[in-house]
Length: 161
Image (cartoon, rainbow, N blue to C red; front, side, top):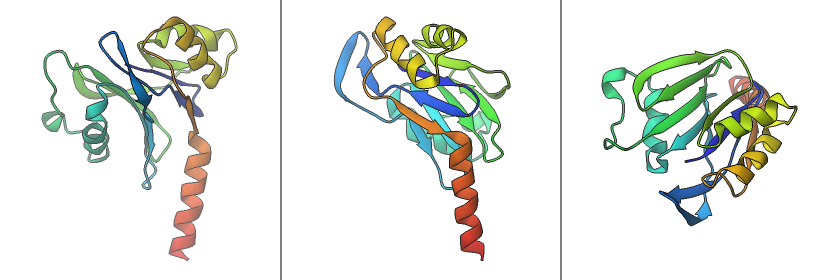
């Protein structure tokens, strides 16, 4: 599992990998930025990160939703190139628009949301969740979605010139 938090401009995620109640060695980046403008944060079964992000970027057709086993859970917070936030989950292969912030998901979501409502930024919210949730921990990745978009736009304009 993991914890992801966003304030509508920044997205933060922990890097802990766990299997059941076992905390494994090392960590992974759970926020992925793509050259076409998408930014995605993946929680749940880490092995599905690549196929889930590619499915979403390809249009997220419900009939093509990647399948896991009956106990495989996942959630993806996706920011499209127009900077709209969407939620995709294992239990419904349809996108849901996220329009109010703060927004959190994953095993430490309640802790992170409470921290943000009390004034914490996204990084601090993940730190607080890590103190309360055994499935949250490790290094924290923070992505400024708006800055990522501005840098991508500038790069694309430079290539077009």
